[in-house]
Image 1 (cartoon, helix red, strand yellow):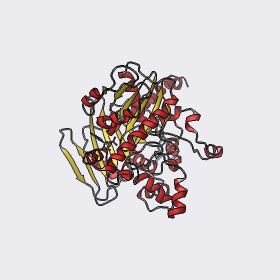
Image 2: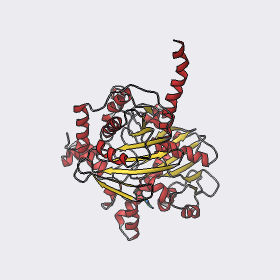
Image 3: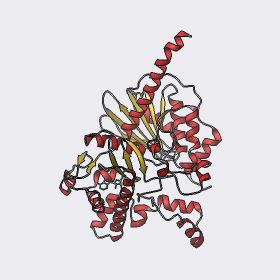
Image 4: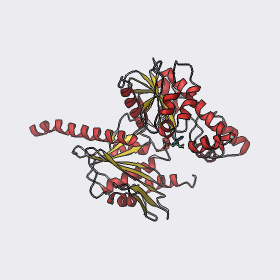
Length: 432
Ligand code: AMP
């Protein structure tokens, strides 16, 4: 196995069986939800307070190293930078959350990349933990880190409801003809090899919000383009995902910051035979040295590439062109999953902020009757919602994503579901 930090957490998890066992309890409805997004050496956290409608954010990074630190902003907008040398996930959460003395969470929502075939967010129980663990071979970089985060928050807040919100769940409505690969059937039936899709929280939020803005809440056929360091597209019919660009793993599909997206599957054997590369080297190349970074040989950051191309860097210009062309190609392909196309939503750091990338992408999509408005696109203030078509044909909108808000909402819904269930069960219990 590769000497990789991601894998060492995985080993740690299996060796030490860290998760605490606790029975399912009844919980009150949450007013404040702590969102945890745990990576292998980092934790993004946010506290969302329902009534006061504000959020507190923090980032713990370089965990397990001498450079471990927490960065964030206080409620008074003062920057916070706390050094916590060699701190692990639990210590980082303890330090980070001790700063929120007046704002304790009522519930915790964990962003979980892979939930196997689970179709919705779930209260975290031993069974759900087993499912997250079982999905580890499908998300080896993410799920073990999420489990470490769950273990840490369960130790810190043993009495709070904790909810797992899965990136994959929204796409579980895909039909078999969209999620099956054309490989031998036993790989699906015995080894779960199929397309799952990711970024579900974002596609769900953006398609719901976008269709609401368009006056047809959760109705009709829509395409979403989530364009950030990781990028994916999705086709949504009447509020349900019918196809998406990512597959078994988040590597399939679009060109991303450092990920290649689709390549000829035979590239692997080509590199093995001709360059003597092993599977780890190929995996690393496709995941962290490819995409915009690989094409440009300069950066994975779209802003840097746009600036470089404006200054005449041809590799940067080509990387941008490939990104937009492949994006348009993916949107065209996904439109096959829709009985009718009502419109397209752009989101993610690139989709929300770059009028240039949106325009270039639309230049490759002349087929569907889109009537793109350059003027509206150029005038849309960065990071705001707005319509960028000329008023005829399928609509085009920019809809800033809100994954945190969606996770908080789903967490509240799951806790409410638990409260309702327990309330409806009470009279029965009383008659016993
Ligand atoms: P995300 O992963 O959603 O945070 O998005 C990160 C990506 O958005 C990076 O490639 C950034 O360069 C890109 N981005 C952010 N702002 C802009 C902008 N104004 N123009 C182009 N790309 C941007």
